[in-house]
Image (cartoon, rainbow, N blue to C red):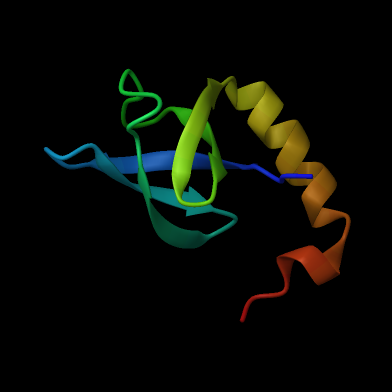
Length: 76
């Protein structure tokens, strides 16, 4: 089973490496699989890669489900 989590793209560099916000945490991901993704888009992230552009509505619904399980959101 794999798990992908929604994230919002905040920056993209010339090498298609993006900074994303995931529940307030910033991570860098590769956009090789979704080169059309742009700043402001919501994407599913798995293993350091953006794998699909999704709607803001879908992203927010999924993030709300994740927030219902505090053990999944516990900041380290």
